[in-house]
Image (tube, rainbow, N blue to C red; front, top):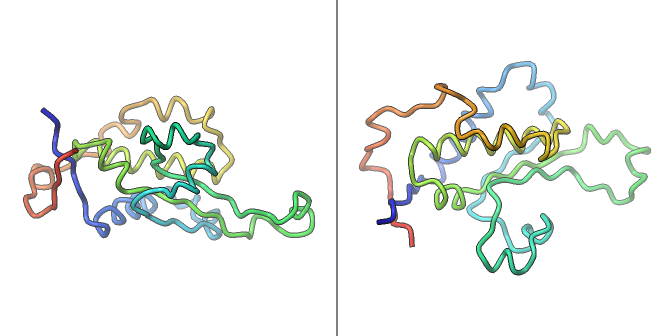
Length: 163
């Protein structure tokens, strides 16, 4: 028997992303002026290709939970001519892959937060290799994330079965 997929409204999902950003220690904020955070339902095929997914992986349904995109420079040497730290970078969090992969409401909340932190770490120069221990921990936030019984059982939240 498959678990029911939790389906948050876009506003509720965005609120989870925003809560994560707002929970950062204050000394991070001075380094976030050039960062835009967006939420989208799914990454496009073009985005998946840009992230080095093969056609076979895309066809199998492999996807992204999030993506950090530094501002692209028109030429490799352009960073020598302009201050690249002032260019806008983009962090995108994908809603549907989270909901499809994490039907448990507590784990969904944890994974949204993990994805935001993971992608934000790229903004600060960390690689996927640097983040392996963080990513492999089911809850690196310990008891920081928990939901009340009402939040877990809220019948007003739209729900959809996994297909």
